[in-house]
Image (cartoon, helix red, strand yellow):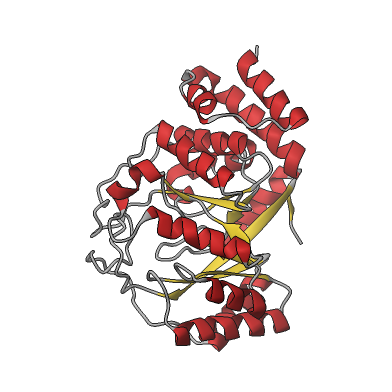
Length: 327
């Protein structure tokens, strides 16, 4: 028999627009492991009610790599760490546009230019703007950007250039943030999300799970994103990189990763939940279960400094599940 508490909560969310409190969801997170199947089943019902079988396929380009002044504990691109990643300055607008066209041919419906660092120079922002214009002129792929903290004027520049979505992760809960990053304030990231919304851009913001945070802090992050009314929530799983402060951080257990997705779906029932970096390493053969657990999209291809799965394997997975990629 299905867990009666989960069924009742699911019905309230689907049919009455109910928004569960953080305390309610912490109680759900503490349910015994035997109820995980019920949690995933209910999360899938919520996803189906709000988003159906249509999924989003995103791709990103590491447009500027390394040299970042921030000290994020997990990040291979931080200048505070000694890693063996490739470092380079911002790519040209033409190179970024060419990459976007290739990703569209491979089936991606969204393409994001991602640049390392807290913020870009004016010249770099103009290059991003020029790339967005070229992409919009030559392709129907949706253009996204992730170029650090923004001012209002820079947010409007991106909007006018054809960027439709801005991606800026909070990374973790406010109560855990200082364990991860000390070189900027949590409110700096919150302010960027607000500037982006005011400029009329879609907002994509999530975090990395498995950094050492508690279940309560995972719920805290999910509730913060709900309160900010973000449009998309990218969820990553820790992929420890040698040379970073988190090089010895253990991987999140596969079933815990699925549980995280389900909890985020309960708290953000109508939002886009995208599974991104670390899914191959963390989930292995359970990758297809992300959609049962509440995901409505994923990132295809390589990530910023780590390799992703063969794109054909992802397309085979989508077809086998009867899912419909967004046009």
